[in-house]
Image (cartoon, rainbow, N blue to C red):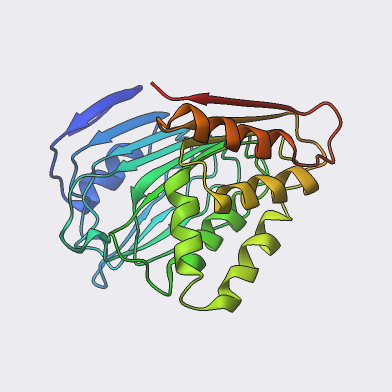
Length: 261
């Protein structure tokens, strides 16, 4: 089996690990995998995806649950999209995820939690979208998991984050108060941040704390866009008044707030 040029979609494909590696190790620059059960990897169920010329990697509803660890190590990779929100038993992927792609410029992570995650410093990163799905009960390791993602993308210029992620963080800090100190430390490293977008905002006081922290510290921030869930006019007006009253360190920063469709 051989694939040439750009591969757009490989759907429901099961192939042996040696075949999988030889297939993409040559000239493929774009790879879009949907509903793929990844190979078992080595004897320790560790699978490393390494392709020196791969620039675009899209993983949609792929299955990693049989692996102990999954490593993406592609030096030329510029775009990585991970979208895995299909129903899972336990709602947590049971393997570790490692991302080592220093030239990544676009990163979208919309997935259930892996067992743990490690992201190398992505110094070239321009845009990132983060939506981590979890079950209904926050756990002690939730904050650490989110921190690892944020540390890995701290050089990003445009950040889009779901309100569910913020809600997850604030709920988790109720278990151990000292864990709440970690997020401000991580967020303070976002020195190059120019745009922030929050989706599905609930208009809560905890979200306002997040907006306040960003506005007071992001010196290069140009725009903050907030899309809220549907709420009554009185509540929306109250939320906007508090939001627009927040102090801003970056002169001329624009704040947009609207109700989502």
